[in-house]
Length: 81
Figure 1 (cartoon, helix red, strand yellow):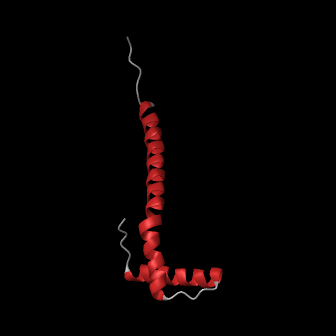
Figure 2 (cartoon, helix red, strand yellow; figure 1 turned 45 degrees about the horizontal axis):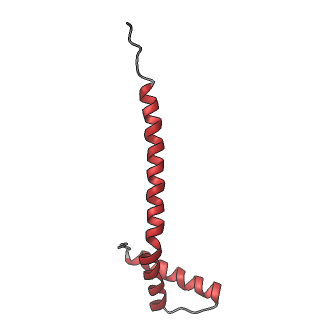
Figure 3 (cartoon, helix red, strand yellow; figure 1 turned 180 degrees about the vertical axis):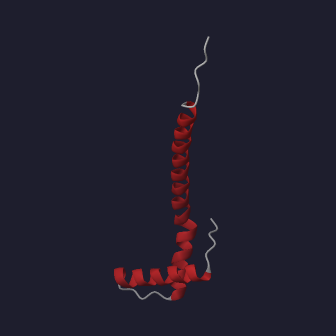
């Protein structure tokens, strides 16, 4: 999956990865190594989060359309026979 990041976004994420590894594992990660971790996350993990977000959006839209359909049906007028 191709995720386009600005230079600033990418640098922020690299800094956060380096900080995480230092705090959690006591490892001082080089910028290159942190960039490789970011590439792994973008290529292997991000699609899972993306797909979950798409499903969440789909469910939300389904709920809203259902509610809208109910609202529209309340506008119907009885027909006299």
